[in-house]
Image (cartoon, rainbow, N blue to C red; front, side, top):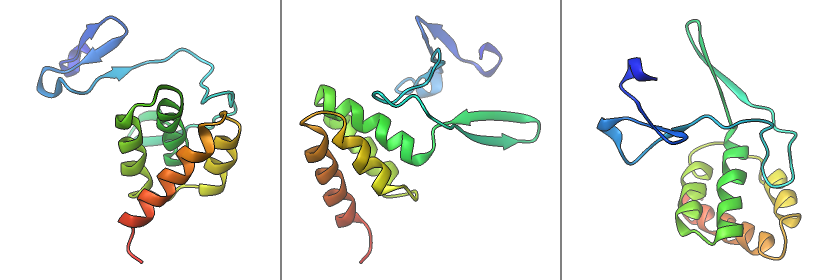
Length: 120
């Protein structure tokens, strides 16, 4: 990371040209809420491989922040991902039902707001 210009700050790595973003390497197992059966997507560039959350799992991860912490930033991030990538709406809805009483209303808001963005 240092070779790329990133500086370590606690558990995060930040780049001076993009200080509002950071990279974090989380320890396993990876989980979203109580779901620890997460299959990463592998992005490859030549010999370099990077494991990432699928768009669906990215939405679930960000939606968890909205459901449990009430952060509107998390909802905004969900909308950005869900409106620009194919996602599995049924998987997200099922997962939201298991995230407590705030899960279903959060799903309904996300779906409603994304539908306003998508062309009819």
